Length: 189
Image (cartoon, rainbow, N blue to C red; front, side, top):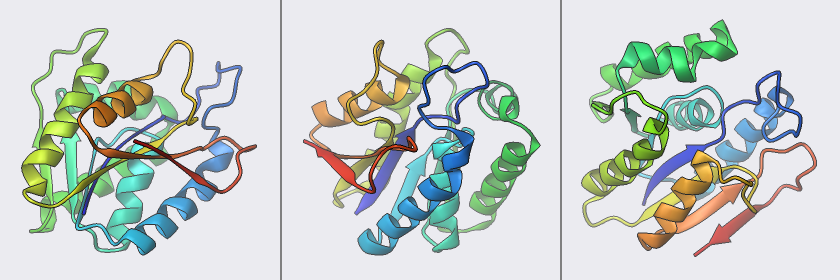
């Protein structure tokens, strides 16, 4: 089984309602690690943004699970828009993940050619799902989201990913990163 992932970034300082506070990074990392230990996926497909994406990729790396990293726009712009705004720690994680994926013969880095505009991150969801389908072959693909399972109003990019994955017939697992959430996974079919 192959995991394709999309998840919320770490909350910015200006976010009034907690969605994924920095204080939850260790908790979410442990939950993702336990999930991977149980499922033993053959690989993980994800973008490398600050927050859930880099956590998922790092937990897979720690378990020697092949990484299939999708960078949907020019790498320098991706780092500026999706990683560096949360600090050097996340930029270092990004670099470590990309270095690992490039040096591991079982892993890949796929550079997309999306144009950086207001909706590029929504278009990236299609890239993630296509990349997973290309890699999976005959294996089943399970979509993993790290987000409030009920979604948000207006829908987040991760809500859009869950919707697209569900419409594609994938099993969608959602892990809630909020501090008040119980340790559970919601399954959306």
